[in-house]
Length: 533
Figure 1 (cartoon, one colour):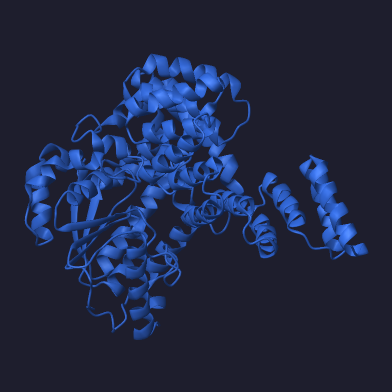
Figure 2 (cartoon, rainbow, N blue to C red):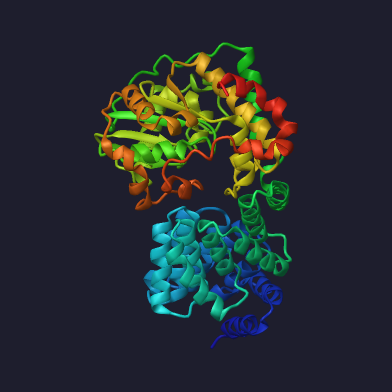
């Protein structure tokens, strides 16, 4: 054995014996600086980087490790974990699939894959992966708890409860299992028991992290269910304060979406808007192309599920179909888009449809409905790429919208970071609505505006009117949308409400929080009047 091989082996043994990730990282870094090569060195570096929330750098180390050990299931799993932490669940699923290909009987890999599916919003796939993990290892506490949480999120409290209880029998302090039981209690409207569980859990959760934020949001729901609105609002506010601190460095600053929208409004108010001359109708795989827009928590999930029940309709829910197309997301104005060539536009259309199919939709020959509320920011792209598309613009009482955005536990990203304070949510709502008004006035768009409350109050007549706008027949299956929704994966946080069917108590919730909302009423009042509330 050569001296270099002996030195490499000694370093590997030292890394394995270190136990302490920081110490292992130092040994590994020293070995790599000497030019020694072994996957264990990169794996140790990656582990330390992951523990310090430096996941992009960890991926580089893991890539180097996999180049040396291309069939190491643990390296694939570690790659998936970093991808999950970087909010790239689709790539994480692919990494866990690679790990499972190498180690199909390893329960932990299936558990990780279930977590990635849950992060992607595919609860059915999450349940399947967690079930597989439990079949391989019946006492896998994390998989039991995760399965319970996924079932509870999907509104299946009867399925969730026994798995959560099994997990808690093995690990009495397991927070995911406890939260799953809380969600079951809330589903059963047992608000007192939910509050009691949460009080006990919060006394154990000392770190201000995502888990504590989620528990506080659920506590707000438990208190709201008891009509204790002052305490509920404070719980929601504390939840959001934690999330704001956790995500401030990522989403605050000059590049903040709110700032970009405000600059765009200023630009558009100063100049005339022109569309490119070659923005002409183009062949489409769909018989009718529809965009369902508005603002988050305005009822778009309800309407999407109503149309998803129609046999001639294919829907896609809250996917980023425009991401990266000419820097989409509210940063472009039509004058910049007008400089693009016809080839550029044709390529962008092809990319859009490729993404639609990549997300599992089959638009060919259908009425295809792309539901993504914040595509409101992409109206110039819609007008340019799909000038014959129909647009349904759904509105809801702005006071209910802002309150709901503030209360709900949403995935934090550029669009939702703005909703973590009440003043920020109201201001962002105001600016997005301003931008929508400017676009609707200046662009050639075929828009139907409708109110969520009217759809709930006069369901069949309103939905028939929307069908008329879309030039498609009404179908009686649309009445039973809640039944079909129960068998469908719904990505939105509105999933449980939609599966309940139509109910009127969602309207006017803001009145119960009138005192807390009073500071933002001046910002919202113009829109209250504009939409007729």
